[in-house]
Length: 190
Image 1 (cartoon, rainbow, N blue to C red):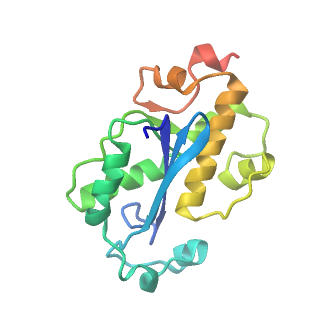
Image 2: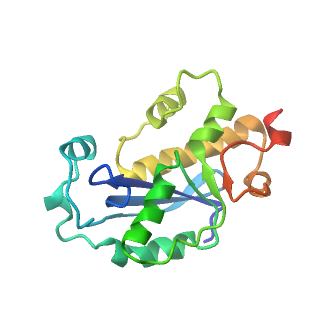
């Protein structure tokens, strides 16, 4: 099944974006999650105490997990030519930096949507647009800092933002920019 968009989230072992230790991808069609995939990833890197405390993933958790080279093919096959999204630029940058670090081709996604920016345009009066705040605002229950859960919630937020602004995914994707950080001007006024 081909989805309307795929939402990606990663957790990292340390402050470097390339140190992906977990990835989750949620596929959405008609505003509903229709497929998902997740994997622990051995980043072959050091883990910072801060990151381990944040997401609970440490060196022992990933010692038998595949490395980025092994998960790259699955990630690329899911995202190739598709609309991809994440809640902030971090995840997009992490994919790019992991590919660079491991000398792998870039993930061949189509347009990239930043769900945080879209949420800012849809609900400018909210106190902030962090994923947990948005989830609480809309009664979405989830476990933060789990890659698949974060991807699922960001996808639900994207669906709600499109509904709030009366725009379809096709209208968003019709924008000329490859990286969409806000609603098109014609839609932003709605």
